[in-house]
Length: 51
Image 1 (spheres, rainbow, N blue to C red):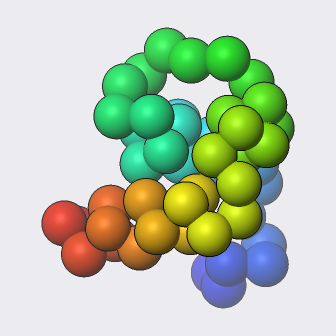
Image 2 (image 1 turned 60 degrees about the horizontal axis):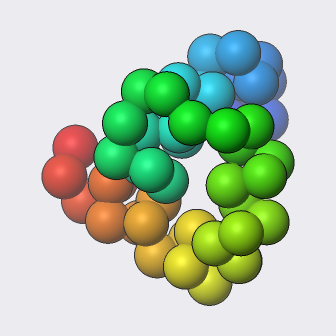
């Protein structure tokens, strides 16, 4: 399976943890908006490095 075939439900919780450090947060869209593109990408990259 490639990334374009993933459903949002499969990546929502890992993305939430990568962005906020926790499993509970406002909407992911709200979090992305508040953090901004560069900070969001930075946090996602850092989470991927930890995997």
